[in-house]
Length: 249
Image 1 (cartoon, rainbow, N blue to C red):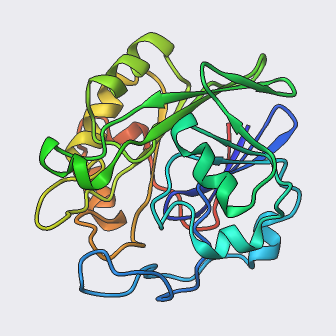
Image 2 (cartoon, one colour):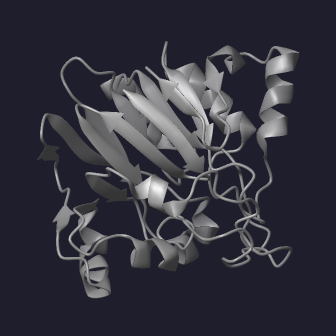
């Protein structure tokens, strides 16, 4: 299995002979929205041209419809016959955009030898959930491959803990920028929650993404590098990929 961080939450996963694009946010730097009023996101450029990112993609996974996970640029750039895998609650909205091959994951779907199912999450504390809406993560597995748990836009909550304890994934991808909404949060995991996840994940490697790209973030790569330097418990299993970096497992 190979994982390439594109930017923020957007990944390319190559697994079981398939190339998957997860949560494409393809806007140019400063051409998206501001989430805090401080700056226009995304705060950084894409590390690759859009055409290169989309080359050879077999399917796209969409966790939810926030603009930093499936933006207008991605909606225009993706072929309308591209297979789109999503939670059932988002399927009709994606079809309305014009996509013709939308598949609801439900209890799980197969893509060749790859099995995909959704997991639950919580996009912040209770006081922001009405604004944030529902989200999901993905569990990807195939014989002979590491099991991947992409937790998505979620804080560390009982749903995440259940997946870690029952599925015992080999690789866990979490969103670690913290982030606030009208002063409330975190909306996704902060540094303390990421360390807690690493503690629950056994021997799994924990990749931290969704960093240094949105203007309402409260945690960045520098914070995790400081934790590693300080020898924080669990930090030795945390990986902080750079935009464009490709990792093999």
